[in-house]
Image 1 (cartoon, rainbow, N blue to C red):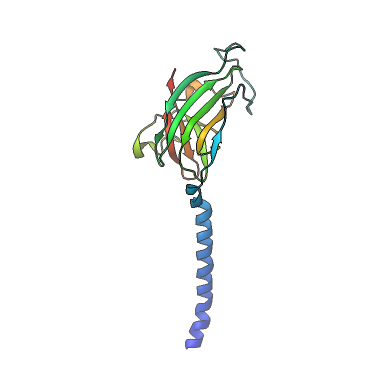
Image 2: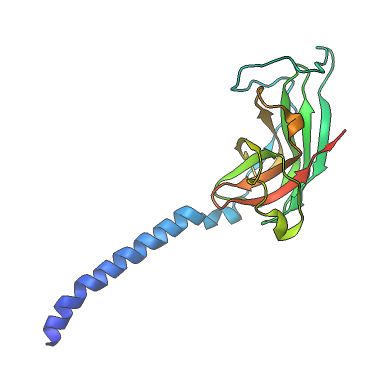
Length: 186
């Protein structure tokens, strides 16, 4: 009976081992815990003009002259949500009439699928603010280039930035805000 038991349990042990290894591999892929210890610093200057993927629509109502430099239309300070986050967010109109969201002195944790979102939702402190940004309208401006530094994100030409009131560093994988800033109009 002992020999039969060994023969019968061997496939179960091997199967359990295969399932456990697959589970660990999936968990590592999904959570990417090593990113918590990896920082990526990106330092970009403010661009003079931005090319966006969407074709230009109607001319902006307040088109600056070509001799006018970048103009900050709104700004705010990042507050922490899921992860400690700090820095300044600016909505900037460039001399050519295009817009960028600029993150300055950003400092947050790295994550598996971080995005910069322009949203119409209010910024709430604490856990109340972690999940609100996908409840309303938002525009993903792309993957977060780095979790530290100063960087620019082009606003597509067919988006009216005046319709949006906040910016979130959004983890798309877990549907949670790492941090966000209310945009106070200048």
